[in-house]
Amino acid sequence: MQADLEMVKALLDGSRKVVVLTGAGTSAESGVPTFRGRDGLWKTHRAEDLARPDSFANNPELVWEFYNWRREMVGKCKPNAAHEALAEMERQIPNFLLITQNVDGLHSLAGNRKVVEMHGSLWRLKCTVCAHVREDRSRLPPVPECPVCGHLLRPGVVWFGEPLVPGVLRLAIEQINSADVFLSVGTSNLVQPAASFYQLAKDHGAVTVEINLEPTVNTGFMDFALHGKAGEILPELVTGF
Image 1: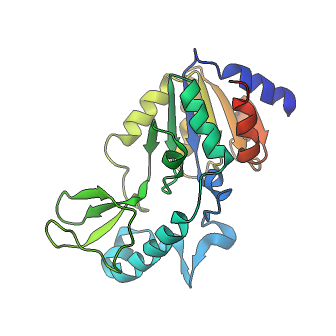
Image 2: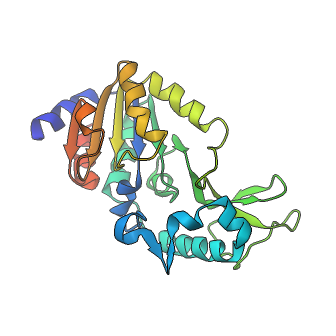
């Protein structure tokens, strides 16, 4: 793998446009649960069953209990070496964009500023009635209300069955289509549309690189596949920038 790592490192110079996609595996090294496998249950509920608009409509108290627990847990997590390396990559590569499927905000805490949060953020609150939206890391009441209109607030995340925030997917596709190098980091490549981003990149001539703890369904289609902890591989890629 060392030879491939050195080749990928050589590609990451300041003259190329680099787009990075990150998934749950990137934050798992910080202690953030992936909600797959053993992490898939909260109390007796499947996380996928709570992260739905109909679940919130039927039982907002339960859904907010889950999200307040997540906010408290994630709030204790710190960016890991993978997050720090991606922040350094952004500082050293002028034409850089990070697209994340994660909602934990750890990329921003690490120092990334060119970030597209495809699935929103745990720290964003949205009113269910009016246009009020705000970032808020404070401890919330069990069922928070909008300070503008008094109606119920909801987490500013994209739930199962909901479309992405308008413009987010278009921006991601536009940037991927013009990338020279596309990195897929810490994602199992099972969730669409992000799972197909590597193909968009390849179709437009980009070099595609997978960095993941284990092989994925896309591994055989990648130009390079570096398997191991992102927190170990990414720092090697930015060493000596």
